[in-house]
Length: 41
Image (cartoon, rainbow, N blue to C red; front, side):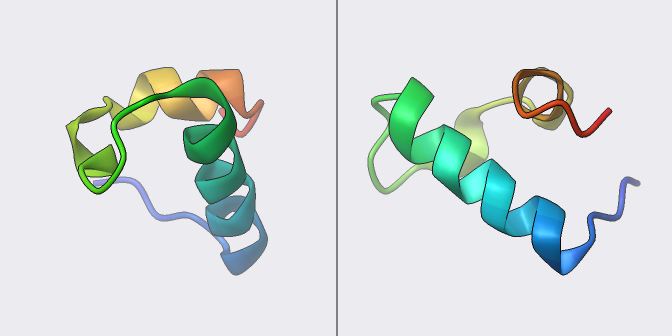
């Protein structure tokens, strides 16, 4: 299980909005992929 800081969560949300088209289902994106895009890994 991976834990993100509040700051990382905001970055992840921003990346989801900018880089994906999943709309209300962002949980379908793999967290490892998303963290890599947001440079959190």
